Length: 352
Figure 1 (tube, rainbow, N blue to C red):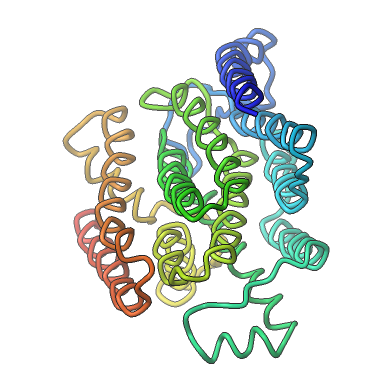
Figure 2 (cartoon, rainbow, N blue to C red):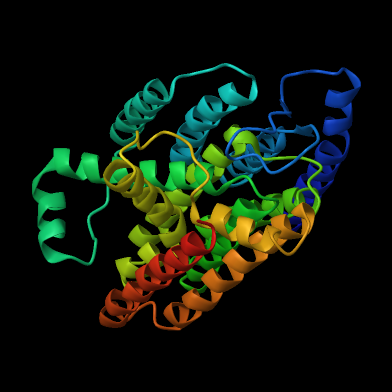
């Protein structure tokens, strides 16, 4: 068993390094317009030279290696991961291939995919930490389906939204996966823990080529894939570890969730524009603009990544030690809202 794990680890590392080192060169050599981000004027763009968007391909195929190894060596078939991640990777990857899908149609496809996948995999949540919600989830299947769909939509779109700075989504995902890995490892959920361990290795290899200077981007395929993997892993970890407060997982996913939720309300209520219309007023973008007044673009780019994730990790640390205390997690989660809204207000005023 130990030799199999070592072989898999070496295979993942060597394959990942080879892909990320040579695939961008291959793309540039053939001067391909697909899998290249050369749109410098879009709201989410903060680079000024073409960069490959094939990062998601590397992560997807490295994860496939892990899934197949688990199947052939341990007879473990990760149906939820393979089905969810494949469909959402393909949906995001279509944009990397320059296949334009209108935002409303894309959102509709996401909802249809989720309804199909949740029913197919019988993948539901039965505990939220709020009694009346728990009762609705148990008594009304349609509400449970709706609730799980919302969870996935917020996290997947949140991952896609915060992606854009070197390492921002990558490091944020790494913090989340490390948390989930240790939770499962110390609670003897070995199969899920080992899957998360290899995911961490895959993500770390990508970050070597993405931060601080980006030789490759995740692309929409990569951000959708990571968002899906995070949502799946958080829900599965919550189900496998009922002693841990659901509010702990809410805090763990807070940034991805609340960035979308806050943006939706801001555009709809304050700015009177379509909630799915892209703009440059997200928290990380305002932070970048503030930093860019004193630093060059490159330093401001990676500094944004470090500041956001360090503050997030500092906020999360007390919850890590108190994750089984439901009352503490419930009230401590309010601090996340306060810090986000206060930070946003300060940065917004500075960038008027």
